[in-house]
Image (cartoon, rainbow over all chains, first blue to last red; front, side, top):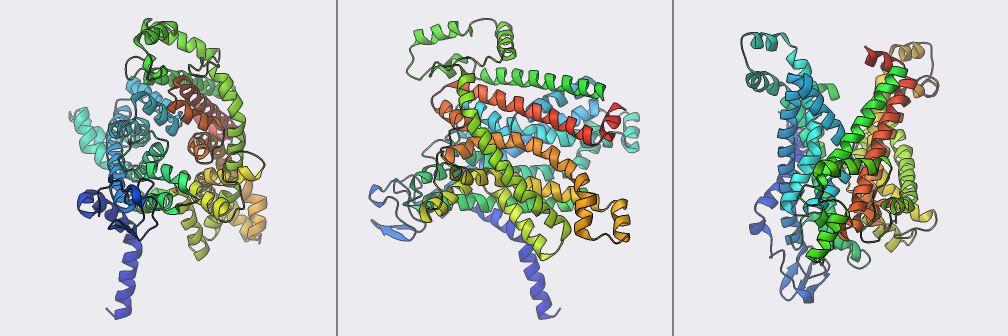
Length: 282
Length: 308
């Protein structure tokens, strides 16, 4: 292979894989936050409040500046990645599993099960998700666990709908019918024959939902309904940074930039996964 | 057609009933909803009195009946904090949210549809790639971040636009853009898909073979057919805009129902929150119904298919 050709190939690889690299970067930052963060994210250095990126105050080196309580912004951003990713991962997995199981069941059992599950799905989908999340958090009270539960509660119908419609068509396939005739029960049919066939579509939904969940968590935190202070969350950091837009641009801009980069990378990956697994969408 | 309408209307009613049931149960997730309605400083006697006054000590089924009966009369209860009917509070703020949603819809359609056309016509060209990047960026941008960035650039640094609150037309510009950008992506995607679908049809090839040029082909032949999905999506996007207003109104201190909701949560004025959610769900169901009917009017094949 000639040198320029190899260079193009590498370059093409970079072009395709950089979203994954960004996600990996955030995952690494979140996992090893205690090792990577230069300072304690909650340590308040009240003399060094709202210092611009790159300043030194009382032997503190603020690489990305400090917030209104003199806390190191870089450390808070690194710890904030934890909250975003934990909430998104957990809520996507819970809502994905619950939604897929219910959708498969509705598509397989038909009859009363189908009517009940799909009606409930319709009801959930007709309440704007943001509003349903807000009212549920208002009842339960804000906390990390509750935010995950609320997002799972509001999002499972998405998966249920996809799983349901795919199951409907797969169940009528001759080989599935044959396996039923040969005595396969619901569990065997659903997990041996249906699940492997729908897992692709479900993962497409899951990747696209992941980005949305990151935004939802940040939105709830922004409104004060997410993880409670002093725990660092990008949405909450944006919310306080809003008060200092005229004097300290970095407090709101930098966490927002991370949020944007993460969601953009997830969406790009989601599009790529969709093209791979589900050619009909192309 | 009539059978379709009746069935669809029945479905909508059942969904509304389901929404009310869901909200009723969400309200009781922690057991006693009285605690949602009292300030943290309330004494046990106050709580007991309020529980009795609101009927939360009655059997659950009775409470549910009362809840539904109130809803049927459009009675959303009275704000415990402000001592004003919830419907009055919502009604006084709703015009602002509608104004904002209208502005956002103009932004979303005004940018989204042309971008979608570009995406469909220049499929893999450099312009389309640029447009696709723009759509993806808009989709990944949290509204509260784009809002804050706009305030920083256009209000604080350049001083062109007022940073927040209401006033003239200039106050509406930034909130509308912040709220509209997300829906813009939806419109661009739908327009692209719908146009590509339409362009692959036989009548387009025939028209092309007769020598009809692209602009004329688009305006005279394709536009109307391709517009159908776009119109139905518009109906559905309105409810998304209303929900998104909660955050945008907070960023720009816009006095609509979103701001009221957030304030109500912080003030533990639960009935307002519940009223807004019920209203949002009601509007969504209504718009869904409307979009289905609209669809069946412009495309009669739908009714035939569903009747089968």
